[in-house]
Amino acid sequence: MNKLRIGVIGVGRLGFEHAGNIANRIPTAQLVAVCDGNEQRARQVAAQLGVAKVYTDPAALCADPAVQAVAIVTNTASHVDMIRIAMEAGKHVFCEKPLADTVDKCRQAEAIVAAHPDLVFMLGFMRRYDHSYRLAKAKIDAGDIGRIILVRCYSQDPIAIIKGTLEYAPKSGGQFIDMSVHDIDLIRWLTDSEPVRLWAIGGCYEFEQYRQWHDGDNVSCLMQCANEAMAFIFAGRAAAHGSHVETEIVGTRGTLRVASVPADSLLEIMDANGVRRECFQDFLTRWHDAYIAEVEEFCACVAEGRQARPDVHDGTRSTQIAFSCTASFRQNELMTLDGR
Image (cartoon, rainbow, N blue to C red; front, side):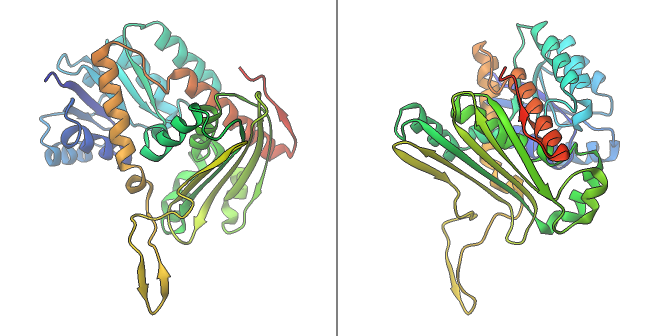
C-alpha cells in the first residue's frame, strides 16, 4: 500500500493529536516530519512518535522532497502564509479551521488554491466526519425528516479549561469565529443553504474579562437561510459538566438529535449521588474518531485525484458568517448577508 507521506506544521495540543493519528492510526498515511517554532517541543514530539525529521522553519519542511502533503495546525493568523508556502512547494494541504483571521485573507487562500488545481486542499471541519453527524446528514438527504425547519446547535467548553481559554481569548477573534464557526459550517452543510439574515446577542455572565475584548463568555445567534430554514447557535465557555456539543435538526416529518445528553460512553453510574453519566472533559476526546476520519478522507482524495470537502470556499463562507455574527453582537442589530 502506498502511504501518503505527511509533515505536520505546528505540534501543540491539536497538532499533536493529528501527528499521533497520522503516525499510528491511519493506515494510508505516514508521518515523515514535524515542524514547530518551539524546537524543544518539535523534537519531543518527533522522539515520541518515531519521526526522524524535525524542522522549525515551515518552508524547510515544505521543501523536503520526502514530504508529499502537509497538515497545517498553526495559529489562525498564519494559515494563509502556510498554505502559500506549502502549495507553491507542490504539497497537498490539510489545514485546520478557521481558514484565516480575516475575510480578505480567506480570499487570498482561495486564489492560492485555485492556482494549484492539481493539488488537494481540505479544511478541518471535523464534525462533518463524525459518525453521528454523517448518519444525520444521510437521513436528511434521503428525505427522512422532510424539509428542514430548524437546526439548533449548542457548543460549550468546560469551565475546567478556562485558564487556557482566557489566555487565548484576546487573539481568538471572538466566540463566533473561535467556537461557533464549527456550528456555522454544520448549518450550511446540513441545510444545503446559506444564512441570509442573523441577529446575535450574549454577555459576560461569569467572566467579565471578555468585555474588554468586545466579546462575551456566552453568546447566541438566530439565523435564517436562503431556503427559509431557521438556525440557532449557542456558544458558552463555562459548562460545569464538561465539553458539551449538541445538535438538533427539526424537520416537517421528523427530528434528529445528536448528543442530546452528552456522555463519553453508555456507562451509567448509580451510587450515593444518584444516577448519572459522565461527560467528555475535552474536545480532543469527543472528536478523536472524527479527526482520524477526516485525514483518512484527505488521503483518499489525494490517492484518487479528487477534490476534498470542506474546501477553501467553505472556509471563506464560514468566516464571513462568523464575523457577521460578531458585528451583530457588538452593534445589537439584525444583519443581512448576500447568501453567496
